[in-house]
Amino acid sequence: MAATQYYGTGRRKSSSARVFLRTGSGNITVNNQPIDQYFARETARMVIRQPLNSISLTDKVDCDV
Image (cartoon, rainbow, N blue to C red; front, side):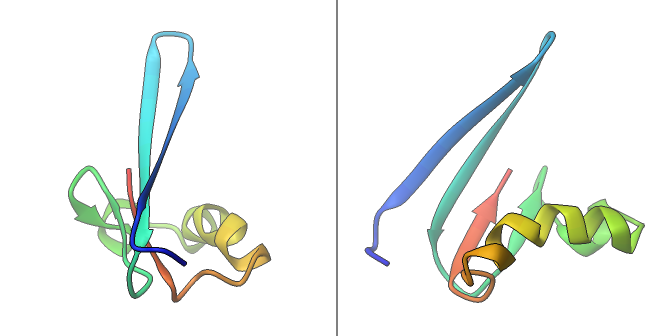
């Protein structure tokens, strides 16, 4: 994967989420907190990681939400 940064936006009603993907070691942060600290349930963490698992990029991309 190139050293570039990818950006995406998701919206629902009045809420919006911005996601930044960049080359890294698989760190996922949500509101400047690690995913394990932000989401208490393992099922929520599994749903977040699912798209990266399906394309085998779990350990190759850092994700900031």
